Amino acid sequence: MTAFEIEPGRLFVAGQWCEAADGARIEVVDPSRGAVVTTVAEAGAADVDAAVRAAREAFDGGGWSGLSGRERGRVLHRVAELIRERADEVAELESLDVGKPITLCRAVDVTNTANDYEYFAALAYSLDGAVRDTPMNALAYTKREPLGVVAAITPFNFPLILAGSKIGPALAAGNTVVHKPADETPLSALYMARLFQEAGVPDGVVNVVTGTGPVAGEALLRHRGVDKVAFTGSTAVGRHVASTAGEALKPVTMELGGNAAHLVFEDADLEKAVGAVIKAFVFNTGQFCMGGPRLLVARSVYSTLLGILAEAVPGVPVGDPRLPETVVGPMAGEKHLKKVEEYVDLARKEGARIVCGGERLDLDGGYYYKPTVIADLSNDSRVVQEEVFGPVLTVQPFDTEDEAVTLANSTPYGLASGIQTGNLARAHRIADRLQAGIVWINDWAMLDPAVPFGGVKDSGFGREYGPEALGAYTRVKSVVVSLD
Image (cartoon, rainbow, N blue to C red):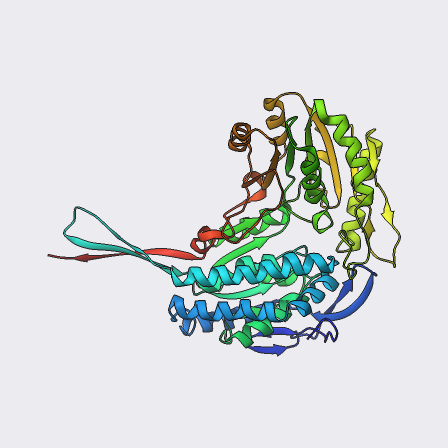
């Protein structure tokens, strides 16, 4: 399967390609044109059961978990190499499926996904325990063991990256996986299944079931053969996932919604700050949980910064994601576009000032929305408090550091935040007070697989990336040997 010849997708179970048990299929739409490009199998409960059973057999058989970390690491290194070798195909497929600009896909999605597998391959080499000193006449040591079958449930906005951030550490630790990608964007998950097989991942270790959340996702979540759930998605769905997994006492990792605040102080380099501000809210067409849709600006530079944004934002290239100059592509689907429209209409009704944008862009039948800057909203507005998840920026002034921190922490979310300042002491002081899993200073979206990220409050719990992620896919066993 390539971006040029897309075959109808089938389920990948136990190393084999197969149709759904009932033959059901769902459409995959190109969001840049609103046109169906292919169909994929729509898995039901029976298909999910077959995938979990395949993963269980592969785990219990020890063919993957029984390998040394070094051997698993070699396979994951090969996965990274294959992603780089097929970078153009992977990028074009992801661009077609999600509507991402092709330049962004190559530079961010494909590159970061390859880096993810390479990083976790290296961690697999060093997966070990520790000897513990005790007053007992005994040798006490710990070892890390894989959990078993991992359910990886991923969203539509970063299919490649957010699958890699789960499957990479799960495989490095010796687990097996059943991956349920978003029903809107399943193509890269199916492509990756081929690469896993080519890289030498044994049959049954990675299985892919495409389908809807209420059917395939729910069946996977509730399956008694699943030992761990790794989920990225909305906070509303995350509550259900956590509650359901909790009934069976399954460990979960939850990366949920975000509504990050971006603080610009009067001593910031405004030229650099504006670049970071625009990147923070238009990156991936604003469909980024760690985006920066809330801009908080020191009152002394508030009007100046609004004026700069009014001139700069309309110049951001919006259009066909296949063109190399495009920075902002379409929304991933019509329902996401309508949601953004509803929030901007609400802002108008509340008397907000639309500094720029505020409307659809009519282009080739696609789901485009102009990057939008909104001022003069109260902090309790739903447009400020809720996750819009589109290319929309609200701008609010503040007078003091305390007020800035209070505004930044005033939403239920806590995934990311950012600070623009020339004062190093202030940067560290404010970073300590922000309720967020990651804080960027004088830039935005600086991400690397070595740096963990995750949420607080309604943005979830657990961490992806870093050694912390590998720990989330293992359990510690203590062994105590009597020396009497």
